Image 1 (tube, rainbow, N blue to C red):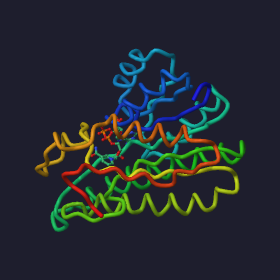
Image 2: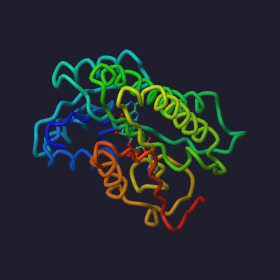
Image 3: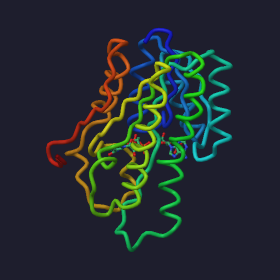
Length: 234
Ligand SMILES: NC(=O)c1ccc[n+]([C@@H]2O[C@H](COP(=O)([O-])OP(=O)(O)OC[C@H]3O[C@@H](n4cnc5c(N)ncnc54)[C@H](OP(=O)(O)O)[C@@H]3O)[C@@H](O)[C@H]2O)c1
């Protein structure tokens, strides 16, 4: 990854921060983004290499454009975009408020689309690029209490696959990650009773993303599916 430019969206999260630490030691040029600038700064000072941090709310398309402009101004290109920002509202369908649906669709679906769309423009011009979208297993399997979350994540899969079709002729590849439960702060605000000790570690998730971006250039790991043995969807 020496010299590669990697944008990690949701870099301060459980999965994103482990990936950032892993990549920092490889010599990659990192652009780390999330909303909370103090957490971004804390992560950056903890890394062995200087990184670009950009505060950005991906639900705002203008902020996403600025993120990509700052990346290109600093590094001139984008080799990999990792979409690892997201949140979960897990409630029975008849308890969902319009605001819950908006929150899920705005962040998990529309926000990740905005980052893909803006990064793809740069990747098209350089005729190469890799978009790693951390979907989650609820992007392909259903679960009670996950109506709004599944809607957003199934949508993320839908737009990713369509974009992958349109962009393959420009040398741009997509990898979709279907992780089962990962023990991160994602679960701090979820009221559903879950056993975090049985979940995957953020290390396992980050290792899978790292694997996808370091396979031989002609290989396209299209989907990576890893679930904890305690909660398997087939
Ligand atoms: N944990 C799991 O069990 C699991 C399983 C499968 C898939 N996933 C998916 O994996 C991704 C990462 O999850 P995680 O477990 O690492 O979650 P996490 O620890 O809660 O981290 C979420 C990250 O997203 C950022 N974020 C939230 N809202 C944002 C916004 N509007 N704009 C920009 N950044 C925003 C957060 O930073 P700020 O709050 O500072 O913005 C944080 O960096 C999510 O898409 C999640 O759906 C998670």
